[in-house]
Length: 139
Length: 154
Image (tube, rainbow over all chains, first blue to last red; front, side, top):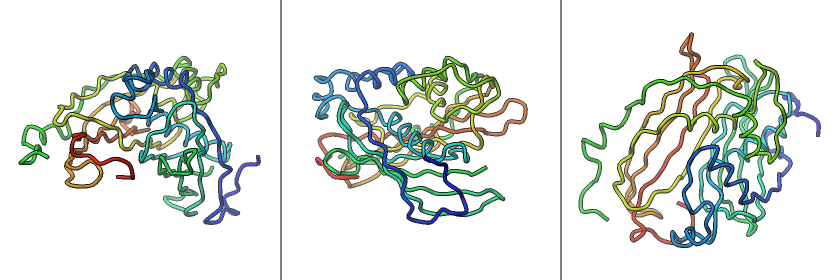
């Protein structure tokens, strides 16, 4: 995939969807990275006790997956200035999710070439589980 | 739902309280551990001084003890989080880190019924200039399951 060219970008351009299936091992590694181990992240019975359908993907892991999709699209054309995620629904481990995105605004600010992206994570039922936003800065 | 607001003066006084500065370093180990989470594999990493992916910030912000947040309501849930970068993090660089509560607000109604949002921030700065390089911001909401309704968005 070739890196986007700032001058050629238009509002509505879509990022290539990133299909993922985050697994329990990934979640446990996230807990270790953060040194924070709420049982509902790795123990299905503990998750059910707090009303979750099973073990769920931590929110900061999901914001990182959005970052990953943006970074994959951007390549070495620039860097990710901001990525934000509003968590709407839990996503279970070992279930498919798709990170989607589209160009929302192309502009120059403070002498820098920037693009706003509307991002999201869609679950296997086609519902948005995360509504996201990102800003990238071109070199 | 409580009969009166839980936003007491003691709770409001938590806003702006910062934990002391501490130094952290963007180490190769932090880089590799972050890649193992987000990419499920890692490489040796770039040379010192080269840019690293933003998700390495997650390997750094657990180096500080987060400010103590009182449990005002029985349940707690992350509702949003955000990373901001003035420039990419760089392999090997040392940064100063602070952790503070930036806002506390209450909501009436909605999916969670009465709820209280705690917004906290980890800021990473250049030691010499004090310029902020990156921030990791998260908002936790506290609520009572008895007042929440199932499904839908907030």
